[in-house]
Length: 289
Image 1 (cartoon, helix red, strand yellow):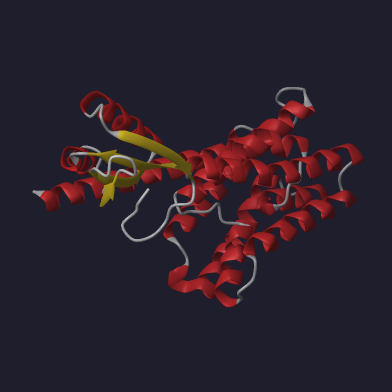
Image 2 (cartoon, one colour):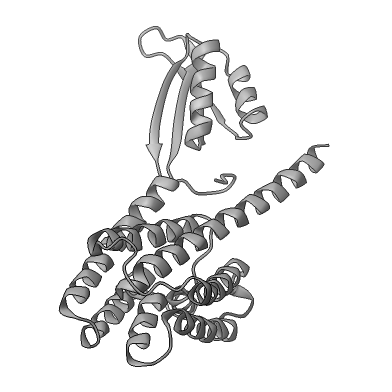
C-alpha cells in the first residue's frame, strides 16, 4: 500500500509539475507577444534577438524566435545528447510554436495599453515570473539557456555571468536598429529583469526551519511524517537553568506546511518551545521541495 501511495504521489507530482511548466511558458509567451514585441523592447535572450532580426528583415519576431530556437535545439542535441533535458525540449518547442500561432491568429502591431512604461512593466514581470517558475521546476525556456548548459558541460565558468554578458550584447546590438527612446527602455528592462527573477526565485525557494523543544517528540514527529509527509531529526537536550532533559525536534518544510505544523503544536502541545527560521538555501539528501 505504501508503494502504491508513493507511485500515486509521484504521478501527481509529475502531472502538477508539467501544469506549472505549461503555465510558466504561457506567461513568457504572453509577456513577449502582447507587451515586448509590439514595443520592440530588447532585453537579451532569443526573444530580444528576434526583435532585432525582425527590424532588419521581413521576418516577424515570432517566426524569428521559432527559427533561432530550432537552431539552438539542434545544437543542444549535438553537444549535450542525453544530458539535454526533456523539460527544456518541451518548453522550447511549446514556446516556439506558440509564438508563431499567436503571431498568426492574434497579431499585435501597437502598444496594448498605450503607455510604454506600463508595457515595459508587464514585458518584464510576466516573462520573469515564468522564468522563475521554470527554474524552480528544474526546467528552462531554452534559447540562450541552451548555450549556458553547453558552457556548463564543457567549461567550468560562471554561467550566470556569461548569460548576463550575452543579454547585454544582444541588448546593445539593438542600438543600431531601435530609436534612442526604445533602446533606453530596453536597457532599463534588462537591468530590472535579472533583479525580478532573482527575487522571485528566492521567494519560491523559501522554506521554514523549525526548532521544537518539547517533552514528548513522538506525537509531533508522527504528525510531521504522517500528515505533512516530511521528516525530522530528534536530538536530546537539557535546560540550562533547570537541567531537565528535553527533546529537540528539527525539521524543514514549505510555508503552507509550516503553518499547519505551527497550528498543530500551538493547539496540542502548549508547553513546547518553538522557533521558526526563514531560509531559501536548503539542499541535500532526503529533502525534496
